[in-house]
Image 1 (tube, helix red, strand yellow):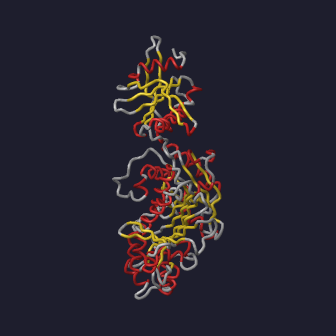
Image 2 (cartoon, rainbow, N blue to C red):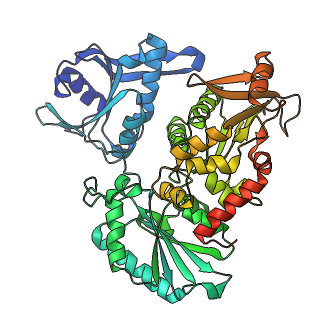
Image 3 (cartoon, one colour):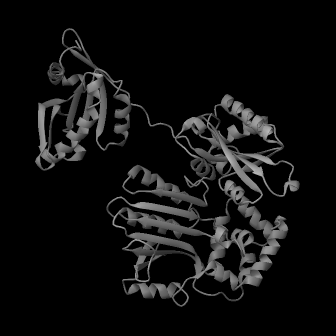
Length: 529
Protein backbone atom coordinates (compact mmCIF):
# COMPACT_ATOMS: atom_id res chain seq x y z
CA UNK A 1 0.00 0.00 0.00
CA UNK A 2 3.04 2.32 0.14
CA UNK A 3 2.48 2.70 -3.60
CA UNK A 4 -0.44 5.00 -2.79
CA UNK A 5 0.07 8.62 -3.84
CA UNK A 6 1.49 10.79 -1.09
CA UNK A 7 -1.66 12.88 -0.80
CA UNK A 8 -3.75 9.77 -0.11
CA UNK A 9 -1.34 8.64 2.60
CA UNK A 10 -1.53 12.16 4.01
CA UNK A 11 -5.31 11.97 4.20
CA UNK A 12 -5.15 8.59 5.93
CA UNK A 13 -2.66 9.96 8.46
CA UNK A 14 -4.81 13.04 9.11
CA UNK A 15 -7.67 10.70 10.01
CA UNK A 16 -5.50 8.49 12.24
CA UNK A 17 -3.29 10.98 14.08
CA UNK A 18 -3.55 8.94 17.26
CA UNK A 19 -1.09 6.43 15.77
CA UNK A 20 1.59 9.08 16.15
CA UNK A 21 0.85 10.02 19.75
CA UNK A 22 -2.23 10.26 21.99
CA UNK A 23 -4.07 13.56 22.07
CA UNK A 24 -3.12 14.90 18.64
CA UNK A 25 -6.00 16.80 17.01
CA UNK A 26 -6.18 17.98 13.43
CA UNK A 27 -6.05 21.69 12.67
CA UNK A 28 -5.94 21.43 8.90
CA UNK A 29 -4.43 19.57 6.00
CA UNK A 30 -2.34 21.60 3.54
CA UNK A 31 -2.20 24.50 6.00
CA UNK A 32 -1.14 27.60 4.01
CA UNK A 33 1.65 29.96 5.13
CA UNK A 34 3.24 32.97 3.48
CA UNK A 35 5.50 35.92 4.05
CA UNK A 36 5.01 38.49 1.33
CA UNK A 37 8.02 40.68 2.17
CA UNK A 38 10.24 37.59 1.96
CA UNK A 39 8.48 36.37 -1.20
CA UNK A 40 8.00 32.88 0.17
CA UNK A 41 5.07 30.61 0.94
CA UNK A 42 4.29 26.99 1.64
CA UNK A 43 1.77 24.47 2.84
CA UNK A 44 2.19 22.23 5.88
CA UNK A 45 1.14 18.67 5.03
CA UNK A 46 -0.71 18.38 8.35
CA UNK A 47 -0.93 20.95 11.13
CA UNK A 48 -2.11 19.53 14.45
CA UNK A 49 -2.30 20.45 18.14
CA UNK A 50 -0.97 18.15 20.84
CA UNK A 51 -2.50 17.51 24.25
CA UNK A 52 -0.52 20.42 25.70
CA UNK A 53 -1.83 22.85 23.12
CA UNK A 54 1.38 23.06 21.10
CA UNK A 55 1.25 23.36 17.32
CA UNK A 56 2.68 20.30 15.60
CA UNK A 57 4.04 20.46 12.05
CA UNK A 58 3.71 17.03 10.46
CA UNK A 59 5.72 16.55 7.28
CA UNK A 60 5.06 13.38 5.29
CA UNK A 61 7.50 11.74 2.86
CA UNK A 62 7.23 8.36 1.20
CA UNK A 63 10.34 8.00 -0.97
CA UNK A 64 14.08 8.49 -0.67
CA UNK A 65 14.12 11.34 -3.17
CA UNK A 66 11.40 13.36 -1.44
CA UNK A 67 12.78 12.56 2.00
CA UNK A 68 15.74 14.80 1.24
CA UNK A 69 13.37 17.77 1.14
CA UNK A 70 11.90 17.14 4.58
CA UNK A 71 14.34 19.14 6.71
CA UNK A 72 14.19 22.14 4.40
CA UNK A 73 10.41 22.19 4.55
CA UNK A 74 10.14 21.63 8.30
CA UNK A 75 12.60 24.46 9.01
CA UNK A 76 10.81 26.76 6.58
CA UNK A 77 7.35 26.04 8.00
CA UNK A 78 8.47 26.52 11.61
CA UNK A 79 9.81 29.96 10.72
CA UNK A 80 6.73 30.92 8.67
CA UNK A 81 4.38 29.71 11.41
CA UNK A 82 5.99 32.24 13.75
CA UNK A 83 6.01 35.06 11.19
CA UNK A 84 2.69 34.53 9.45
CA UNK A 85 0.56 33.25 12.33
CA UNK A 86 2.42 34.83 15.30
CA UNK A 87 2.85 31.48 17.02
CA UNK A 88 5.44 31.63 19.81
CA UNK A 89 8.56 29.59 18.97
CA UNK A 90 8.38 27.57 22.19
CA UNK A 91 4.91 26.35 21.17
CA UNK A 92 6.02 24.72 17.92
CA UNK A 93 6.99 21.08 17.42
CA UNK A 94 7.69 19.05 14.29
CA UNK A 95 7.22 15.42 13.29
CA UNK A 96 8.74 13.91 10.16
CA UNK A 97 6.85 10.82 8.99
CA UNK A 98 8.32 8.70 6.21
CA UNK A 99 8.13 5.21 4.81
CA UNK A 100 11.87 5.33 4.04
CA UNK A 101 14.47 6.61 6.49
CA UNK A 102 17.69 5.78 4.64
CA UNK A 103 18.35 9.40 3.67
CA UNK A 104 16.68 10.93 6.71
CA UNK A 105 18.27 9.37 9.77
CA UNK A 106 21.59 11.21 9.72
CA UNK A 107 20.36 14.75 8.93
CA UNK A 108 17.31 14.52 11.22
CA UNK A 109 19.51 13.29 14.07
CA UNK A 110 21.83 16.25 13.59
CA UNK A 111 19.03 18.79 13.34
CA UNK A 112 17.16 17.38 16.36
CA UNK A 113 20.23 17.96 18.56
CA UNK A 114 20.79 21.56 17.55
CA UNK A 115 17.33 22.86 16.63
CA UNK A 116 15.43 24.87 19.22
CA UNK A 117 12.14 23.08 18.38
CA UNK A 118 11.29 19.53 19.39
CA UNK A 119 11.83 17.31 16.35
CA UNK A 120 10.88 13.63 16.14
CA UNK A 121 10.80 10.99 13.43
CA UNK A 122 8.38 8.15 12.68
CA UNK A 123 8.62 5.29 10.21
CA UNK A 124 5.22 4.68 8.61
CA UNK A 125 3.62 1.51 7.34
CA UNK A 126 0.40 1.50 5.31
CA UNK A 127 -1.52 -1.78 5.50
CA UNK A 128 -3.83 -3.35 2.95
CA UNK A 129 -6.89 -2.37 4.96
CA UNK A 130 -5.74 1.27 4.77
CA UNK A 131 -4.84 1.37 8.44
CA UNK A 132 -1.56 2.83 9.54
CA UNK A 133 1.10 1.86 12.02
CA UNK A 134 4.19 3.80 12.98
CA UNK A 135 7.36 3.19 14.91
CA UNK A 136 9.22 6.08 16.44
CA UNK A 137 12.68 6.36 14.95
CA UNK A 138 15.55 6.22 17.40
CA UNK A 139 17.72 9.11 16.36
CA UNK A 140 21.48 8.81 16.41
CA UNK A 141 23.19 9.87 19.64
CA UNK A 142 25.73 12.65 19.72
CA UNK A 143 28.99 11.27 18.31
CA UNK A 144 31.55 10.66 21.03
CA UNK A 145 34.23 13.30 20.68
CA UNK A 146 37.69 11.90 20.25
CA UNK A 147 40.42 14.16 21.58
CA UNK A 148 43.91 13.81 22.95
CA UNK A 149 43.59 13.64 26.72
CA UNK A 150 46.22 15.17 29.04
CA UNK A 151 47.60 11.65 29.74
CA UNK A 152 51.00 11.70 27.99
CA UNK A 153 54.29 9.82 28.07
CA UNK A 154 57.76 9.98 26.47
CA UNK A 155 59.64 6.92 25.18
CA UNK A 156 63.34 7.08 24.32
CA UNK A 157 65.06 4.84 21.76
CA UNK A 158 68.61 4.30 20.55
CA UNK A 159 67.79 4.20 16.82
CA UNK A 160 64.95 5.26 14.50
CA UNK A 161 64.39 1.58 13.71
CA UNK A 162 63.91 0.82 17.41
CA UNK A 163 61.39 3.65 17.59
CA UNK A 164 59.47 2.28 14.61
CA UNK A 165 59.34 -1.16 16.23
CA UNK A 166 58.35 0.42 19.53
CA UNK A 167 55.50 2.31 17.89
CA UNK A 168 54.16 -0.85 16.28
CA UNK A 169 54.31 -2.60 19.66
CA UNK A 170 52.49 0.30 21.37
CA UNK A 171 49.81 0.14 18.69
CA UNK A 172 49.25 -3.58 19.25
CA UNK A 173 49.03 -3.22 23.02
CA UNK A 174 46.65 -0.26 22.75
CA UNK A 175 44.40 -2.13 20.32
CA UNK A 176 44.28 -5.16 22.61
CA UNK A 177 43.23 -3.18 25.67
CA UNK A 178 40.65 -1.02 23.88
CA UNK A 179 42.55 2.23 23.45
CA UNK A 180 42.53 2.61 19.66
CA UNK A 181 43.11 6.37 19.46
CA UNK A 182 46.74 7.42 19.84
CA UNK A 183 48.68 10.47 18.69
CA UNK A 184 52.46 10.68 18.85
CA UNK A 185 55.28 12.98 17.78
CA UNK A 186 58.76 11.84 16.78
CA UNK A 187 61.58 13.98 18.15
CA UNK A 188 65.32 13.59 17.57
CA UNK A 189 68.45 14.84 19.29
CA UNK A 190 70.31 17.36 17.08
CA UNK A 191 72.86 18.92 19.48
CA UNK A 192 74.99 17.84 22.44
CA UNK A 193 74.75 14.26 21.26
CA UNK A 194 77.25 12.92 23.82
CA UNK A 195 75.22 14.08 26.84
CA UNK A 196 72.40 11.57 26.33
CA UNK A 197 72.30 7.88 25.42
CA UNK A 198 69.01 7.79 23.49
CA UNK A 199 68.80 10.18 20.55
CA UNK A 200 65.31 9.31 19.29
CA UNK A 201 62.10 9.95 21.18
CA UNK A 202 58.40 9.28 20.84
CA UNK A 203 56.00 11.68 22.57
CA UNK A 204 52.68 9.86 23.08
CA UNK A 205 49.22 11.20 23.85
CA UNK A 206 46.31 8.88 24.70
CA UNK A 207 42.95 9.56 23.07
CA UNK A 208 39.67 9.02 24.88
CA UNK A 209 38.80 5.40 25.72
CA UNK A 210 35.74 3.70 27.14
CA UNK A 211 37.34 1.00 29.21
CA UNK A 212 39.16 0.82 32.55
CA UNK A 213 38.34 0.96 36.21
CA UNK A 214 37.81 4.32 37.87
CA UNK A 215 40.73 5.37 40.06
CA UNK A 216 38.76 7.54 42.45
CA UNK A 217 39.53 5.19 45.35
CA UNK A 218 43.23 4.87 44.56
CA UNK A 219 45.39 7.13 46.66
CA UNK A 220 48.01 7.45 43.93
CA UNK A 221 45.50 8.78 41.42
CA UNK A 222 46.02 12.52 41.30
CA UNK A 223 45.79 15.30 38.77
CA UNK A 224 45.26 14.08 35.21
CA UNK A 225 45.13 10.43 36.35
CA UNK A 226 42.07 11.13 38.51
CA UNK A 227 40.43 13.18 35.73
CA UNK A 228 41.05 10.52 33.06
CA UNK A 229 41.21 7.16 34.86
CA UNK A 230 40.56 4.92 31.85
CA UNK A 231 43.22 6.64 29.78
CA UNK A 232 45.65 6.52 32.71
CA UNK A 233 45.13 2.78 33.11
CA UNK A 234 45.65 2.35 29.37
CA UNK A 235 48.97 4.17 29.63
CA UNK A 236 49.99 2.06 32.64
CA UNK A 237 49.26 -1.11 30.67
CA UNK A 238 51.25 0.15 27.68
CA UNK A 239 54.18 1.12 29.90
CA UNK A 240 54.19 -2.27 31.58
CA UNK A 241 54.75 -3.93 28.20
CA UNK A 242 56.82 -1.39 26.28
CA UNK A 243 60.49 -1.94 25.43
CA UNK A 244 62.74 1.09 25.11
CA UNK A 245 65.81 2.79 26.60
CA UNK A 246 63.78 5.00 28.92
CA UNK A 247 60.28 6.15 29.83
CA UNK A 248 59.38 9.59 31.19
CA UNK A 249 55.99 10.88 32.31
CA UNK A 250 54.63 13.92 30.49
CA UNK A 251 51.65 16.24 30.37
CA UNK A 252 50.43 19.11 28.16
CA UNK A 253 53.10 21.76 28.13
CA UNK A 254 56.06 19.36 28.05
CA UNK A 255 55.91 19.27 24.25
CA UNK A 256 56.28 23.07 24.24
CA UNK A 257 59.49 22.65 26.21
CA UNK A 258 60.78 20.20 23.62
CA UNK A 259 59.91 22.57 20.81
CA UNK A 260 61.83 25.38 22.46
CA UNK A 261 64.85 23.22 23.34
CA UNK A 262 67.58 23.68 20.67
CA UNK A 263 68.84 20.17 21.36
CA UNK A 264 65.69 18.46 20.07
CA UNK A 265 63.64 18.70 16.87
CA UNK A 266 60.17 17.31 16.19
CA UNK A 267 60.44 15.39 12.94
CA UNK A 268 56.93 14.04 12.37
CA UNK A 269 53.67 12.70 13.75
CA UNK A 270 52.04 9.28 14.00
CA UNK A 271 48.50 8.37 14.88
CA UNK A 272 45.91 5.63 15.08
CA UNK A 273 42.13 5.58 15.08
CA UNK A 274 40.71 9.10 14.98
CA UNK A 275 44.23 10.51 14.69
CA UNK A 276 45.50 8.30 11.88
CA UNK A 277 47.37 10.01 9.05
CA UNK A 278 44.68 8.73 6.67
CA UNK A 279 42.06 10.78 8.52
CA UNK A 280 42.54 13.62 6.05
CA UNK A 281 40.78 16.22 8.21
CA UNK A 282 43.84 17.36 10.17
CA UNK A 283 47.26 18.76 9.37
CA UNK A 284 50.50 18.76 11.34
CA UNK A 285 49.56 22.07 12.95
CA UNK A 286 46.42 20.43 14.35
CA UNK A 287 48.42 17.49 15.72
CA UNK A 288 50.75 19.91 17.47
CA UNK A 289 47.90 21.86 19.07
CA UNK A 290 46.28 18.62 20.26
CA UNK A 291 49.44 17.24 21.89
CA UNK A 292 50.39 20.59 23.41
CA UNK A 293 46.88 21.01 24.81
CA UNK A 294 46.50 24.46 23.28
CA UNK A 295 43.28 23.65 21.46
CA UNK A 296 41.35 22.71 24.63
CA UNK A 297 43.16 24.58 27.38
CA UNK A 298 44.36 21.22 28.70
CA UNK A 299 47.79 22.67 29.22
CA UNK A 300 46.13 24.55 32.12
CA UNK A 301 48.71 27.30 31.66
CA UNK A 302 48.37 27.86 27.92
CA UNK A 303 45.55 28.32 25.42
CA UNK A 304 45.59 29.48 21.79
CA UNK A 305 42.43 29.65 19.73
CA UNK A 306 40.17 31.58 17.38
CA UNK A 307 36.38 31.72 17.13
CA UNK A 308 33.38 33.72 15.92
CA UNK A 309 30.61 34.50 18.47
CA UNK A 310 27.97 33.99 15.79
CA UNK A 311 28.91 30.31 15.57
CA UNK A 312 27.31 29.59 18.92
CA UNK A 313 28.34 25.99 19.55
CA UNK A 314 32.02 26.65 18.85
CA UNK A 315 31.93 29.92 20.81
CA UNK A 316 30.69 28.17 23.95
CA UNK A 317 33.46 25.58 23.85
CA UNK A 318 36.02 28.27 22.96
CA UNK A 319 35.12 30.25 26.09
CA UNK A 320 35.09 27.12 28.28
CA UNK A 321 38.48 25.98 27.01
CA UNK A 322 39.98 29.43 27.51
CA UNK A 323 38.70 29.47 31.09
CA UNK A 324 40.44 26.15 31.79
CA UNK A 325 43.80 27.82 31.26
CA UNK A 326 42.94 30.67 33.67
CA UNK A 327 42.56 28.52 36.78
CA UNK A 328 44.23 29.99 39.85
CA UNK A 329 44.21 33.54 38.52
CA UNK A 330 41.22 35.27 40.15
CA UNK A 331 41.71 38.51 38.20
CA UNK A 332 41.88 37.10 34.68
CA UNK A 333 39.18 34.55 35.52
CA UNK A 334 36.82 37.53 35.88
CA UNK A 335 38.15 39.87 33.19
CA UNK A 336 38.66 37.53 30.24
CA UNK A 337 35.06 36.20 30.13
CA UNK A 338 33.75 39.74 30.68
CA UNK A 339 35.70 40.98 27.65
CA UNK A 340 34.57 38.00 25.57
CA UNK A 341 30.95 38.63 26.55
CA UNK A 342 31.25 42.31 25.59
CA UNK A 343 32.71 41.36 22.22
CA UNK A 344 30.00 38.77 21.59
CA UNK A 345 27.29 41.41 22.08
CA UNK A 346 28.48 43.32 19.01
CA UNK A 347 26.64 42.60 15.72
CA UNK A 348 27.94 40.68 12.75
CA UNK A 349 30.65 38.12 12.26
CA UNK A 350 33.61 38.84 14.53
CA UNK A 351 37.00 37.17 14.32
CA UNK A 352 38.39 36.68 17.83
CA UNK A 353 41.93 35.51 18.51
CA UNK A 354 42.98 34.65 22.06
CA UNK A 355 46.38 33.60 23.39
CA UNK A 356 46.85 32.91 27.11
CA UNK A 357 49.92 31.92 29.10
CA UNK A 358 49.02 31.73 32.76
CA UNK A 359 51.71 29.79 34.66
CA UNK A 360 50.75 31.13 38.11
CA UNK A 361 54.36 30.59 39.16
CA UNK A 362 56.53 33.70 39.46
CA UNK A 363 59.49 31.67 40.75
CA UNK A 364 59.39 29.57 37.59
CA UNK A 365 59.29 32.75 35.51
CA UNK A 366 62.40 34.05 37.24
CA UNK A 367 64.35 30.78 37.32
CA UNK A 368 63.74 29.90 33.67
CA UNK A 369 63.21 33.30 32.11
CA UNK A 370 65.44 35.87 33.82
CA UNK A 371 66.94 37.86 32.27
CA UNK A 372 66.96 37.02 28.54
CA UNK A 373 63.86 34.86 28.10
CA UNK A 374 61.41 36.63 30.35
CA UNK A 375 58.95 37.30 27.54
CA UNK A 376 58.61 33.56 27.01
CA UNK A 377 57.98 32.65 30.65
CA UNK A 378 56.04 35.57 32.13
CA UNK A 379 52.22 35.57 32.36
CA UNK A 380 50.61 37.20 29.34
CA UNK A 381 47.38 37.54 27.41
CA UNK A 382 46.96 38.73 23.86
CA UNK A 383 43.43 39.06 22.51
CA UNK A 384 42.21 40.61 19.26
CA UNK A 385 38.65 41.07 18.01
CA UNK A 386 38.24 42.22 14.41
CA UNK A 387 34.79 43.60 13.58
CA UNK A 388 33.05 43.61 10.17
CA UNK A 389 33.43 47.38 9.75
CA UNK A 390 37.23 47.21 10.07
CA UNK A 391 37.36 48.33 13.70
CA UNK A 392 39.05 46.23 16.35
CA UNK A 393 39.59 45.63 20.03
CA UNK A 394 43.09 44.66 21.14
CA UNK A 395 43.83 43.49 24.67
CA UNK A 396 47.16 42.98 26.37
CA UNK A 397 47.41 41.42 29.81
CA UNK A 398 50.45 40.99 32.00
CA UNK A 399 51.87 41.04 35.49
CA UNK A 400 52.63 44.62 36.46
CA UNK A 401 52.91 46.93 39.44
CA UNK A 402 52.20 50.54 40.35
CA UNK A 403 55.54 51.07 42.05
CA UNK A 404 59.25 50.48 41.50
CA UNK A 405 59.70 48.31 44.57
CA UNK A 406 61.26 48.90 47.95
CA UNK A 407 62.55 47.27 51.14
CA UNK A 408 62.61 44.54 52.27
CA UNK A 409 62.61 43.35 48.65
CA UNK A 410 62.09 40.47 46.35
CA UNK A 411 64.36 37.93 48.03
CA UNK A 412 62.75 38.51 51.42
CA UNK A 413 59.18 37.96 50.20
CA UNK A 414 60.12 34.93 48.10
CA UNK A 415 61.59 33.25 51.21
CA UNK A 416 58.51 34.13 53.24
CA UNK A 417 56.38 32.15 50.79
CA UNK A 418 58.88 29.39 49.95
CA UNK A 419 61.37 28.63 52.73
CA UNK A 420 63.79 27.08 50.21
CA UNK A 421 63.87 25.73 46.62
CA UNK A 422 62.76 22.29 47.77
CA UNK A 423 59.53 23.68 49.24
CA UNK A 424 58.83 25.37 45.91
CA UNK A 425 59.49 22.12 44.04
CA UNK A 426 57.17 20.18 46.37
CA UNK A 427 54.42 22.76 45.89
CA UNK A 428 54.96 22.78 42.14
CA UNK A 429 54.81 19.03 41.64
CA UNK A 430 51.83 18.86 43.97
CA UNK A 431 49.91 21.15 41.63
CA UNK A 432 49.29 23.83 44.27
CA UNK A 433 51.74 26.49 43.08
CA UNK A 434 48.94 28.84 42.08
CA UNK A 435 47.85 29.35 45.70
CA UNK A 436 51.35 30.18 46.94
CA UNK A 437 51.94 32.30 43.87
CA UNK A 438 48.92 34.47 44.68
CA UNK A 439 50.44 35.10 48.10
CA UNK A 440 53.82 35.98 46.61
CA UNK A 441 52.37 38.30 43.97
CA UNK A 442 50.30 40.08 46.62
CA UNK A 443 53.30 40.56 48.94
CA UNK A 444 55.35 42.02 46.09
CA UNK A 445 52.59 44.45 45.09
CA UNK A 446 52.18 42.93 41.63
CA UNK A 447 48.80 42.80 39.87
CA UNK A 448 47.43 41.11 36.78
CA UNK A 449 46.49 43.87 34.34
CA UNK A 450 44.10 43.92 31.41
CA UNK A 451 44.39 46.86 29.01
CA UNK A 452 42.32 47.39 25.87
CA UNK A 453 42.72 49.58 22.79
CA UNK A 454 39.62 50.05 20.64
CA UNK A 455 40.21 51.34 17.11
CA UNK A 456 37.54 52.48 14.67
CA UNK A 457 39.94 52.02 11.76
CA UNK A 458 42.11 49.33 10.24
CA UNK A 459 45.85 49.24 10.79
CA UNK A 460 47.99 49.85 13.84
CA UNK A 461 46.53 51.60 16.93
CA UNK A 462 47.05 55.34 17.24
CA UNK A 463 47.26 57.63 20.32
CA UNK A 464 43.77 58.89 19.51
CA UNK A 465 42.19 55.45 19.87
CA UNK A 466 40.07 54.71 22.92
CA UNK A 467 41.84 53.03 25.84
CA UNK A 468 40.05 50.71 28.22
CA UNK A 469 41.25 49.82 31.71
CA UNK A 470 39.68 46.64 33.05
CA UNK A 471 39.63 46.09 36.81
CA UNK A 472 38.03 43.65 39.25
CA UNK A 473 35.91 45.57 41.75
CA UNK A 474 33.75 43.78 44.32
CA UNK A 475 34.33 40.53 42.45
CA UNK A 476 33.02 41.92 39.16
CA UNK A 477 34.61 43.30 36.03
CA UNK A 478 34.65 47.07 35.59
CA UNK A 479 35.78 48.83 32.42
CA UNK A 480 37.03 52.41 32.46
CA UNK A 481 37.12 54.18 29.10
CA UNK A 482 39.58 56.94 28.24
CA UNK A 483 36.54 58.82 26.90
CA UNK A 484 35.20 59.16 30.45
CA UNK A 485 36.57 61.33 33.30
CA UNK A 486 36.68 58.34 35.71
CA UNK A 487 39.42 56.82 33.59
CA UNK A 488 42.11 59.22 34.85
CA UNK A 489 41.24 58.51 38.48
CA UNK A 490 41.33 54.74 37.94
CA UNK A 491 44.58 55.01 36.01
CA UNK A 492 46.24 57.13 38.70
CA UNK A 493 45.28 54.68 41.46
CA UNK A 494 46.58 51.64 39.59
CA UNK A 495 49.73 52.92 37.89
CA UNK A 496 53.04 54.59 38.64
CA UNK A 497 52.79 58.15 37.26
CA UNK A 498 50.22 57.06 34.67
CA UNK A 499 52.05 53.96 33.46
CA UNK A 500 52.02 50.36 34.48
CA UNK A 501 55.44 49.12 35.51
CA UNK A 502 55.94 45.84 33.61
CA UNK A 503 57.38 42.80 35.32
CA UNK A 504 60.76 43.21 33.60
CA UNK A 505 61.24 46.72 35.00
CA UNK A 506 60.05 45.59 38.41
CA UNK A 507 62.59 42.76 38.47
CA UNK A 508 65.34 45.10 37.26
CA UNK A 509 64.82 47.20 40.37
CA UNK A 510 65.64 44.05 42.38
CA UNK A 511 68.19 42.65 39.93
CA UNK A 512 70.76 41.65 42.55
CA UNK A 513 68.20 39.85 44.70
CA UNK A 514 66.63 38.23 41.65
CA UNK A 515 70.01 37.00 40.45
CA UNK A 516 70.83 35.61 43.91
CA UNK A 517 67.53 33.76 44.17
CA UNK A 518 67.84 32.37 40.65
CA UNK A 519 71.33 31.01 41.32
CA UNK A 520 70.09 29.48 44.56
CA UNK A 521 67.24 27.65 42.83
CA UNK A 522 69.34 26.60 39.84
CA UNK A 523 71.92 25.04 42.11
CA UNK A 524 69.26 22.83 43.66
CA UNK A 525 67.69 21.98 40.33
CA UNK A 526 71.15 21.22 38.91
CA UNK A 527 70.29 23.05 35.71
CA UNK A 528 72.89 24.40 33.31
CA UNK A 529 71.95 27.31 31.11
